[in-house]
Image 1 (cartoon, one colour):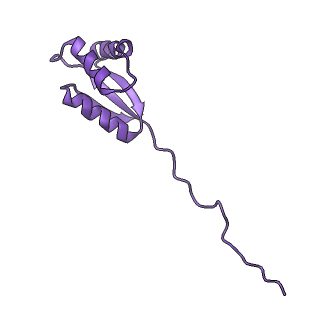
Image 2 (cartoon, rainbow, N blue to C red; image 1 turned 90 degrees about the horizontal axis):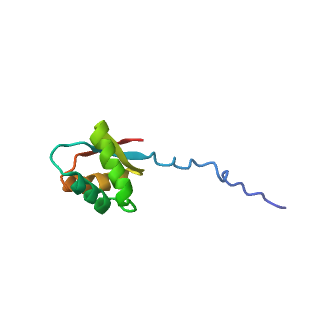
Image 3 (tube, rainbow, N blue to C red; image 1 turned 120 degrees about the vertical axis):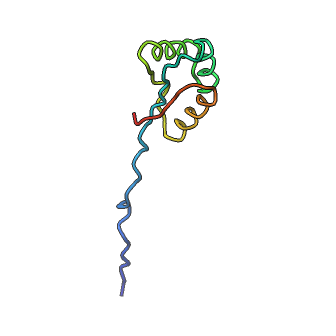
Amino acid sequence: MTTTETRPDIGTEQKPAILPPWSVVLHNDDHNEMMYVVRSLVKSVPNLGATRATRIMFEAHQNGKATVTTCPLELAELYRDRLQSCGLTTTIEPA
């Protein structure tokens, strides 16, 4: 006599959704010099070169704000905190 063992369906469990991206936003201010803002961006955000940092600084200067980077929430919080520690006004928002 053979017995058949039943198992629960494999692969029916829910996979977690991919974490939504967040944007780090630099706001224009009249307190910091432009070159200081560029140096702070390069120092605070990995893989951000001086050319891209200069573009971000000018965009924030002309439009009031500019997106620095888009990444997962924990990294966005880290970059925001680093930039704020340099005296820059930054926020994060869902991308």
